[in-house]
Image (cartoon, rainbow, N blue to C red):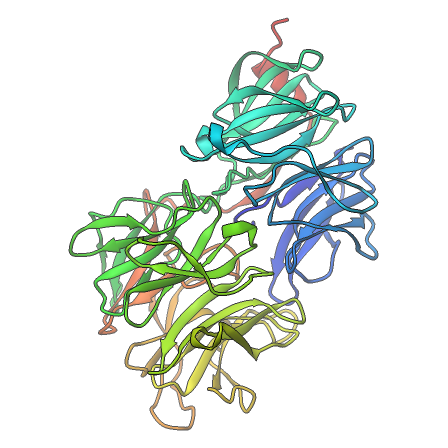
Length: 564
């Protein structure tokens, strides 16, 4: 699942579910699965589709794609994709009304709910968050029956997603009122209830549709629903009472710990570091600190100081900040951010959190940095993002030349997580260009003449390549999560040994194949900084799975009876 959008929906008649999934051969697509059939069918071609939602008659599926962020639709039976409009930021929910208009929300804090015709056109603004009253944004709209009012979520400037409020906006009077506090992403059900997300659980409360008021107290009805840092809960409910949701997998926001693991697999916990939703640990050039992407609460960049044993928050903006990498002098961090409504442009900021983040790119797609180098004259940032072919490609930004960007690898295949060897001779990266029915694999090319040759490193698939500091070893993660090592002989010719397993695949490695490094290697190459799921190591979190519950309204009426 995507770390920020609702990537699961069910048609109103409860007969088909649509979801986003990734395959090694084609990348990310939307798939449709009829509940009376065993196999899904592709709904869209390869791309970066997100946030599917259905038309009221179930004949169309609308969705969003970045680069630039665009709202599109496609028939449920497949066919050509139609463009509806440009969005001003990453999607934060959308709903298709009986009046054949779509109301949507984005991550741009200056705009709230917006409306556009389902046939396409220019969006019009409906609401705007009142920042003076503590409102950060208006998200997750849901039409009420008759399309005269819409539920939405008000996120707070302080307090995190758990302090959100569910409100209703009357499209006739243009007035809003608060319905619930401490929840988000509410949906009205024909059983006469509101169901909404709160702390990884679905809660329900009886609802008076005429008065637009909740009745009585809410009750938890479904636990362990995957909830993302943006407050997105992966669930939907059809008009016939069929519930569909994603369960298990721990989720991006699940607590994890930082641990050192040596080459023999012996583990040493960093006990003073609190359990948080760590994702991308990157050691500073001198090894005294580690920058981490933490996906709970604000989804920000933090720095852990090993000597002082404290966490310092670096970023404070309301969007998702991710994939930090250090500049060679250890003074700054380069990272991907949604500041200003970008899908994920490159920014840099002082590593101690002082000052403000400065943009390095415009970020028309999600861009993730993987390395920063300095050759004595110029600072270069290696990063991946959608290229001309709308796939992940590797580029290089030169800061001192007006933030100029050059493309290193721009092909129909996906390339990402690029890493230049310490001697500057080789570029390691991961790609899916081996063809259908294969794993993503790690490759190496000469640098900077990357088009001359290409060498396969991971014979059985691999991701997240990372060089030892002495350049004599290349590490990567096998498809089962095991940490692998390949010896590299010095010289102008690429000569390596056979890949060998160092550490079993029991550590966190992200979700899917679109993640930056989830581990790092110490300066001396003798141990590795890994991310470990919190809790009993012998009881790993259950794998994420789509759960379908038919006739759910009957259970809901029993759990949450209407009192009047």
